[in-house]
Image (cartoon, rainbow, N blue to C red; front, side, top):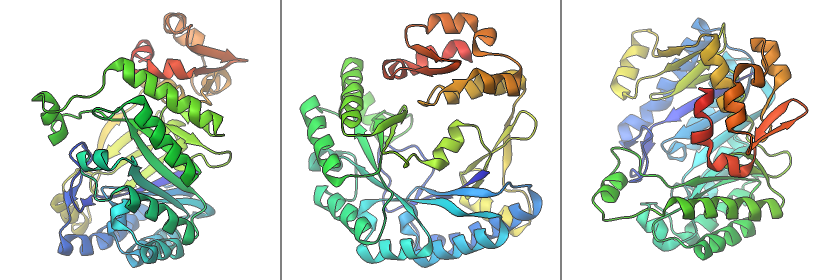
Length: 376
């Protein structure tokens, strides 16, 4: 099975912390964009060997800027051109400031069965700082509308380690999120990404992010409170109730193939040791390549055995499921201990071996960027 990712590179206004490819919306361009995606889908179906698709993910940008009729049209094209699983997980990312009960009803009727709302926080002050379009009540309204529209698989984004945030502030956020009872939460620490307005404000001293100690305390507070509330911490930044893990994202971490459609989208194909591809983040070049009947993607990386092994471990150790020696033996002819004895020894305090399945503890995830280096 494979995943399908569709990138919608438009925002009503760009959030100052975001480094994903997007442009502030232009009515003429966004109205034409679904036809580009349909053309790209048709081209890929004719020129690529794509496995049956069991997950679809509309990401961005702000996919909820597309009309429900456009989403329906794109999904119809997918169904007509690919082998689409009857129980496919179909996710739409949505900004609470761009949806209504009417639009959410439209997305649900179009076939979207999983909604990911970019709530970020329930603090009005922090929402203003983050440049979000909605306030606290607007976020709550969007969640209520989603339920009314029939979404029973709702994911909410929670951002933590915000400027001047206290643990009490974070506890208040968690309390409000739990009242909304989402099936899934994605919890990210705020970072100052290079070349963003937010990074410039941090660099100038206008804003300050919390230190590493606060980040660690906040991470563990989220882990403990969500675990107590019945959520499984199944990936560094992700929590789900039983049966509601994000199947699409699990495909990334399990190194399953996926096709990326749209300007700025990425793909992974698993033939031989695997390769990664990118559609350049350039709307004009994307449109022209499609009109010329050319391949819109460029190859970023072709893996050999060693780089594929390292990436498999890197992705697997991000998850609670971890990586099993039986899987490594099947694909690479080695166990984790065989391949990286020194890295295993260095991570022993945080690395759990449960009958040949390796995983990191939550405290190990806090040190992930450091612990994973010897495996790469």
